[in-house]
Image 1 (cartoon, rainbow, N blue to C red):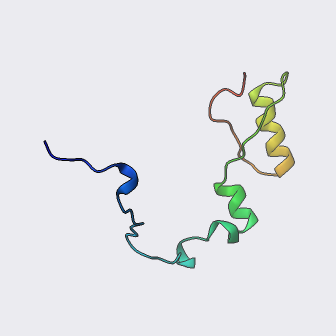
Image 2 (tube, rainbow, N blue to C red):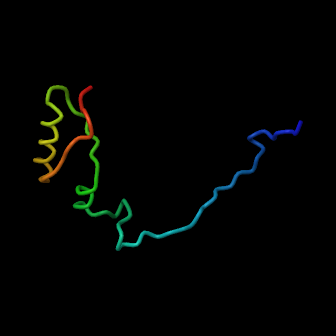
Image 3 (cartoon, rainbow, N blue to C red):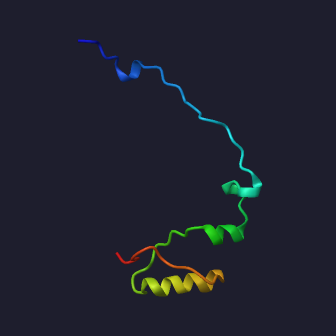
Length: 78
């Protein structure tokens, strides 16, 4: 039976498929993304308080951020 080396004895290396730069024509680095794009393409993690419905909270978000569209991805109830 062949001997199997212990996992901690195997030399490991980080493999990089390719190095690339973000072309500004196609987007931004996350830390350089302008605020309007964050709102347009972003997700807000929200801890909804007990009481108001998911629909009400989505309406609050629309009003506070001044956007036309906001919604939720399923129930916000616990």
